[in-house]
Length: 114
Length: 108
Image (cartoon, rainbow over all chains, first blue to last red; front, side):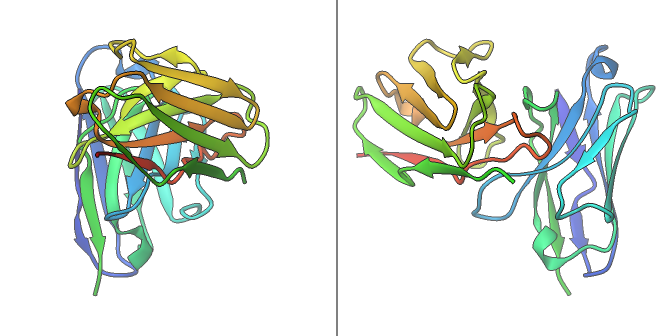
């Protein structure tokens, strides 16, 4: 099971850090993915990280602003979001595995507005 | 970047009928294509990967086919719980893992 947290309201130019807590002993064996969904719209792949954390990948729309990381000792995935824009407003989902998203969390809503 | 186009945008089907959804890639993605189902207010769920392999626990009424640029998701006999939005995703030219715009399957 995956549980996201850390969403909320941020101002343009601000920052938020999302967390995704995984239950079970196999988190460290899985690559992980973040996918977002603007209100009423479709899915957009955001970022992924390999098992072990040695490789990270980003969509062009977030490159240089977002940082994905993981702490396998805490079974937790993170997404540090800086320089937020209005267009980053979305529900953010974490998912196990990459590039196929096998299991998804319930999502956390990020709203960027002044 | 690969563009994934799904059609139709909305499909009206009666319960028990067959539904056929289409996904087209702007260039070949081989068989590196997944399908997801998303019910209102819920997270997406993986249905199909490798264009035709059902994920764990997915009923046999869901089937996928295609390769290259043309793909199909077929639901052989629609059940009430199948009325949802369906997304395709390519992962051959990854990153990014590009999603299609979705097809909403609604009750006719």
